[in-house]
Image (tube, rainbow, N blue to C red; front, side, top):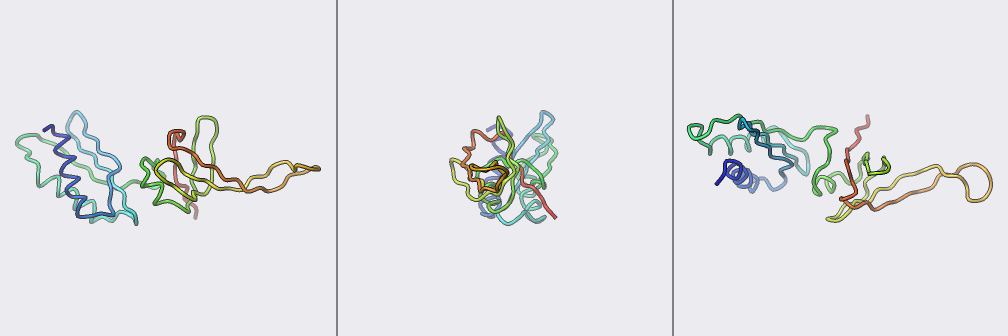
Length: 154
């Protein structure tokens, strides 16, 4: 079993005890720096990071392989990477970059295949001069999303 496989296994075991916490990213550098990024359906708390860190640290032998460890939650403004993150953020405003355009809209639904965004836009009237406000709604497959970030408003 490789070092990364062992770390991944330890994380999976620790996450079984915390079903609302999920892994976003696991990176192990050439110098054996382990970087674990977590998220939670209701928000990661410090204790979640401590528990996952201990589960890794206490089950690896530094005599076999010296390593450093960093366990953190996703930050505000981080790119959404997995379907579970989209589902968690239903009802919030996203900035979604596609190949040809960028859309800022409310995330109204997310399933395993695509997300659904809704927003208002000003468009020329069909009859007469001027513009009118129209409701837009679009399903976007995950494969078409280059980057999606939750916007924070105060």
